[in-house]
Length: 535
Image 1 (cartoon, rainbow, N blue to C red):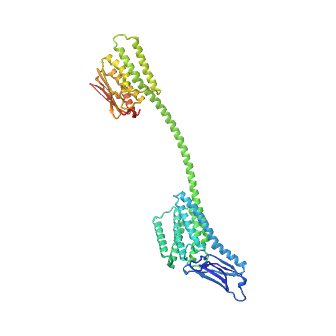
Image 2: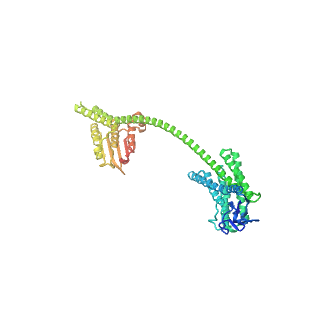
Image 3: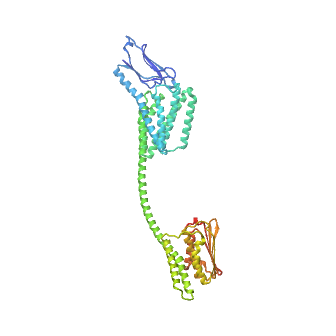
């Protein structure tokens, strides 16, 4: 013969006549947690005797937790054993499988949420899985550790149940793209207050408190499931409908178990443990579906972005090609303008000087003079060509050394025309000049002096090069000629020389002031420190 006891809450022992069959480890606080442990025993023949035999079961527990005996079955082992195995599957195997699935999926989606913090549904699902894992230990653990009393375990499980229901609601709302700020805040404030009250009451927890908390948060769970069903019907999104179907199956199981817990229906078997794995797997599939859909959108976006980048790269290549062509054309034009300025300022001034000397000569000039003129023109042309190909004259030690060739060339011409010329030159450079800047200053001064010869009919001229302080340089050319209209000259073709001088001074980073009236013309250029010229 065999005896099978469906369950016994909270702990107990069994015997036949006066011989023990089994006993839990602790029948006093802290009680062994054998409430979800089916008991099966073969009745030893030595313990049975003729006549009446008595099978005794002892149950130790609390009315608060519905302590008592489950169904008792006695009969041949081949009839009793299948009943025991079925009950073992429902009360022991399913809860353990549920916990394994919960911890696996919870850890996976916790990692996903840590990598993608903006996906809040994954984080709330991970918290829901963790809470369900801790809540499910109540059905699996047979030892009272780490709590010293049954009431400690009960308080802990009730507290975890409130967190689970709250986290489940948050997951459902976030997955459905729903936000209820006031409701969510009220839910978590209430949950915190309930948890604090449970911890404060401890072992003296009244039975009504236990039932109110359990029923109240079960109502939160059921209400969330019902609300999500309606939300899924409104959105018609496949992932919402699938999760709603999973919730519906679990909702039926939770409703049944709550009715049995309240003893409204007479059934000692809970469906939650059997359906919870399906619920968790379904929720995980929905999240995985949503995750893969998001990844698909990201991949499509990346492909589109790559196509746009390629198109932008091609357009940029074409734009850069056109810009390069424009830069080349602009460089060629700049070179031509530079050559024209150099020809005008350098070779042009030499030609004008030579023409004036030939026109003013009273007698035929000797051949050596023409040779000297031609050599001077050759040197000016060579200087223009050298500048055009990047060559620049060497630097000079002092302003007097730099201006000496100009002073000699124009001094002879001024002497021949009876023009008095005063040269006031600084003894040293305010700052060390660059060769390109020396050439620009030379061209500027040549143009200024040539203009005096060509247009002013001056009797006196003064050239001044002084230190303006802080490394700056002041260069001025003044004459007592007839003067001219500066504004008119700037607008006319005849003013190319003035514009050339302004451009040269501007490239040196300086400023040119031109004043002209009946008393003469004054050109004043102020140049910043030579080592800081913009060129």
